[in-house]
Image (cartoon, rainbow, N blue to C red; front, side, top):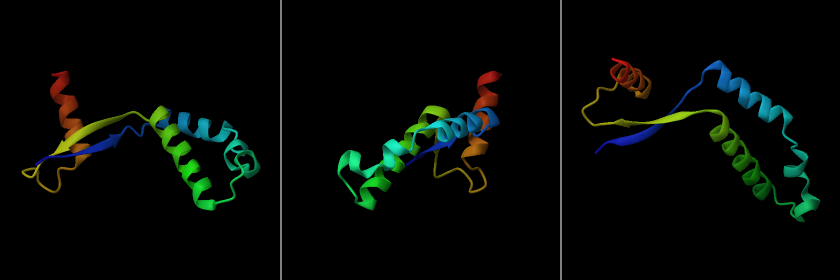
Length: 90
């Protein structure tokens, strides 16, 4: 049975976009507890994680890569992505 994993494109342009979004986001809207009437740190942390995951999905493209049981251990998802790109460009 193949397992499917996400491989993120970590090129500088995408990381810079994420840095910009994280740096310019108004975090007060997330951490200002009186707005929601909640002072539960777990709830605030959950909202923080949701925001960061949302920004990552907006800024960093990713591909799904299938890793099968016959793939050797050294053939990781990055290797498979490069092989797939080479095959599609040929």
